[in-house]
Length: 364
Image (cartoon, rainbow, N blue to C red; front, side, top):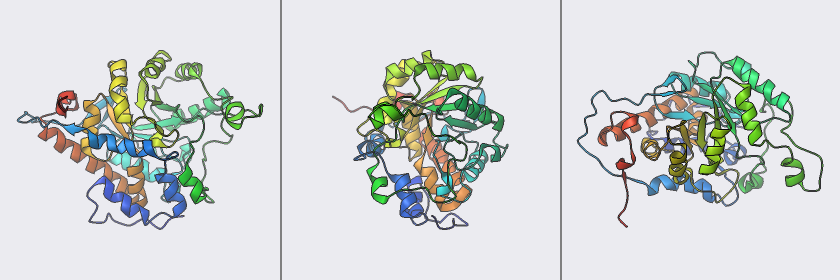
């Protein structure tokens, strides 16, 4: 399944992308293709990254940044920086400690972490040392009773927000996984759920009459928001109208995401979709950007275009596979330090100072 993690971080790892080439040597083809692949021709997967490369900084100078910091408050809790760890399934596929290593790293770096419904570690095993930075990503289960039971377990484990993913009612066409013959190895499973996701046996179409017959709708979002006192973030939004619908259904936050390009190919890059959604939300709720972040400058660009904070996914799994909890913590520190440098050089003492004026718009 994987080779043992290194005891220390290799000296040539100085950026998030350095972890990717090291991680490849620690993972077999099965795990690597599951982690790295996207849907179909992987155009959206690539565009998530390339959107950041297309966006340039304006180069504002001589700002007074004395006393600057990267702190922010989300739902009444303080975070040291705006980089959260996105929900990723089956983390024991990449490191023997799996989600426990990730949550330890997040706690050490005062970072937010979103635990996947498909985690390979039981909710009850999570250490209660997260200082309120542990959120739970929820997939609706076969029935509302099953969903409610999972929600109550997450609440009892100490999570402080619910992130409901809405952009993957069916799995994407992941050709890279298919070619590799991906399968979960023995000992790795989604241990927090006992029943399959909602399906129906009626009808001739596997997609329309079975897989999609019992998936949640907007009324289920409203039900979920009423079922918990925790803030509910709706993840998987790419259209302003859907962002408004989520808010009307009781969402307390919006996560702009295309599932890392893993479900539907040729969707827009999340950075390109962000400004219109941020404008529609108009400050009524936090807006999170998920997809393509590899540098502190990417975090800066996302905030300039309307994000409150960002979520990173594959990069922290690369770090986990390479060096366990130490690697994840080092990745978070690297991104935070890069963000601080970009802010300082751009004249921004706080996250609130970052604006579209700090981005370069080519003349027409």
